Amino acid sequence: MEDTSQILKLLSDDTVVTRPSDGLLKKQCRSNITVSVTAISGPRTGLSFQLEPHTGITLGRAPDANIQVVDTGISRNHISMHFDGSSVIVEDLNSANGTYINGTKLTGKIEIKNGDQISIGVSTVLKFSLNNQLDTEYKDYVEEQLSKDVLTKAYNRKAFAHFLNSAFIAAKRDFSSVCLFMIDVDNFKTINDTYGHQVGDKILKHIADKLIQTVRSADIVCRYGGDEFAIVCPNISSLRGLQLAEQVRNKVEAMRFTVGNDKINTTLSIGVSNFPDNDIQCVSQFIAYADKAMYKAKRKGRNQIGLISDDNN
Image (tube, rainbow, N blue to C red; front, side, top):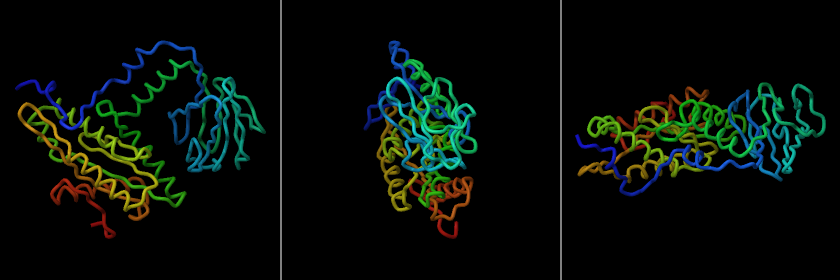
């Protein structure tokens, strides 16, 4: 069989993909110092936030907090941090349960040092770090490798679980809404069997790119496994969620690939569940409803959107 890895082309979108490490290795070492805060325990473990010079940020449960952390015991606006370019000042914002720096309760303001640990809420511990620019870029690269799918660069299944759980908790707490799309690429096994896994992998990569381009910046695109994707859409109504799912379906249906003399088009079956409309009680039920809706779309002929009705049939 002819080597198709070099001749697969996306007719409507010439996308050049480079590895994150390419840019990293080409950068020259710089002496710029950056400051960051990394969650080392609690709901957002592993996530890191960089502080820009001459700016202030707030951390708390409030949706408009610069760093939102959903943790029992954290106030809506719990602490503030200000980086003046040479030092970082932390201030407790009259939180209900207090802030602790290396185990000592914070009163007023304090300048924090490299390696200091900030404890808030029940389980959240933040570590303050000073880094040069190359350190920061390398840490960002490592974080991406741990949270992103290697092939598609969408978030992986572990990250999906974190994002969906956080969005669901926030929606229940704030009386807002969240939608979940479970997506299956129609007849993908046939593409793999006919043209080989290299072609299949490239098509998956382009589909993931299209999903990321189509959804809102607040939405999270994840590779759930194989040819399945999931999209978490916080703060969106059920109607707007359905409209967005239809946009996603249309964009992918319009994609065309060519392998040799053959042209391939791809379609999606999308299952949508939403909170609070579907009376969802937990995250596992959220996923089960969207999954069931997706299979309903496949049974009805594929290339369409499935919904869970009020009676869940």
